[in-house]
Length: 198
Image (cartoon, rainbow, N blue to C red; front, side, top):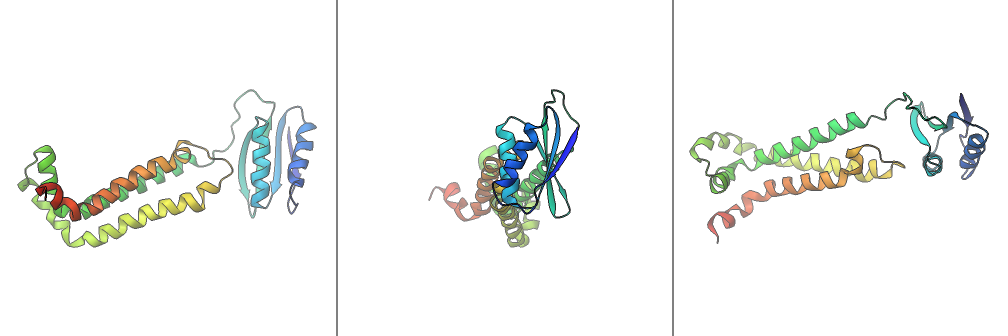
């Protein structure tokens, strides 16, 4: 059974109260709550999740439909929230930032690899081809990392529910990526102290 209630343009806590009444009247089924404000989305989803119910959202034009599943023990075939696509996008951007940061530090990468792993510096002479583009690589890496942090503070952090491993560990993974990029971008400036000990 699918039941829909219209909670658009209602002031808080009216959407939550109507959702509660609708759920109380259902033994089992799917309740679709149509809302059009961020606070209503947050409050209705939080209420339903506090009841231990499955919650899913979808956009319908300017409105959002919150689907609440009550009473089903089986797994329902509901549309996914796009977490897999978001995960691939996140890892692609992090990898892009890391690669551009490495390319930005190629001028001094040879001596570091030789010091750490015994790699012949002569075999890495081709890396100097990237040296004239160091500033471009630096700017690209900073922009990518900056975008990922912006995405967290202005989009993901404001979600009422954080779904998927990337969303839940976003700050941890991004912090590690940021530290790596920062080390690679600043390495040419402090490399001489590391390599010479002066």
